[in-house]
Length: 317
Image 1: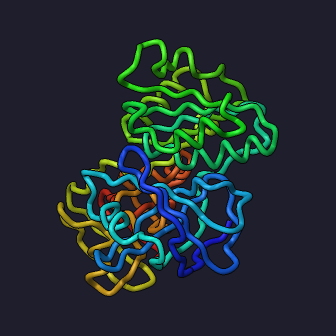
Image 2 (image 1 turned 90 degrees about the horizontal axis):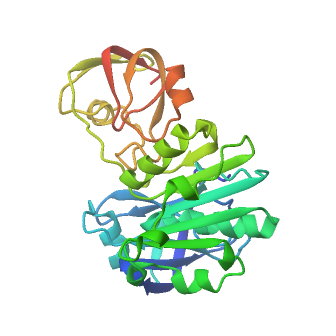
């Protein structure tokens, strides 16, 4: 995994696919290698936002990166701006590639669940699993075939027989039924899910209730509905010698920035992990979707863009 590498990449090709999804190819000199599940951080200077987009291109591809970007009607500015600026010939400031959603390549059985634009990392995973000759199935869920991006490519792919399409507007038998479509739990069976939060929570909760180990149910949220508000609490930035009150409408990251302590923040929703900060002591009120249950239980890290505290938190800042 390559981390924190800043590049200027050029849009070499753009395909406006079904469902309001722009497929954007990026080229540059000596692109760092990627692994299935990796993403890029893209900076959008006009709106001063960083946004994360999963790579859907073949991890074996060395000549370009490809991402798929949904023009989200509920966008906070990021996806609309990408659709505006990512025209052939345009240059973008990019960091990465990073991979917080790695593929367990030795699994005996892998089942991939992609909902809507959440299909992008699943395509890269499917390409890699096919190249390795592994046993896998890809379930791709959308509202209808008319809004199913990548459909032509996937139906022509050498692993097309491993793909099951599910559309909300078609018969019940072809819809995703987890009682039927989840494999039996096994230490050598791994599940991957990406898509809207409700879809992901349904798949994850059903899989774990059916006996799949939490460590074998891999997830990556590309956005999350997160409540940033709560009761006031105190943050001590130990190394800086600063103690601050975080009010009901404040976030830790914003309050720190107001007092000259800069913590890099990108997603502001607790999904990307950029702002993870070491906690020396105190009770954390986790609001993120990035840290695992085990990491939360350790109590020594938090996402300061959205998570809160109770009483006093001492941070290693």
